[in-house]
Length: 94
Image 1 (cartoon, rainbow, N blue to C red):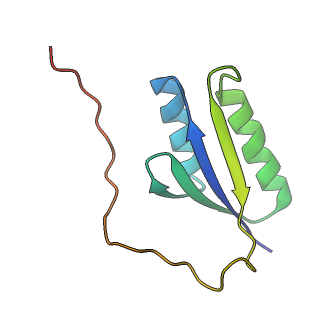
Image 2: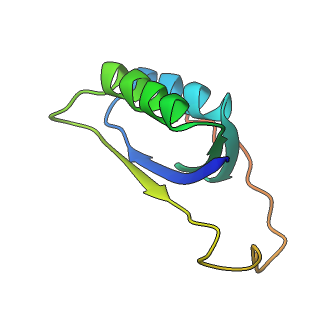
């Protein structure tokens, strides 16, 4: 049985944010700037992901939320709109 999670994050540091984004991207799809849909095969892999996230965050500055999505919530995924998300490139104009 596969488990689907909605994972959102608010990370205070660019380097940590990039590491967390890369980790989540290796497990699922980015659906918003700081939100991923992750599908994992077992509860053990969920625990492994949680452990990896704990090691990457600063507990005082960052927050990661994992919301389980049970199959009984909706019969199908509904997406309204066709906008595609692009990776944001931060820059400074001096």
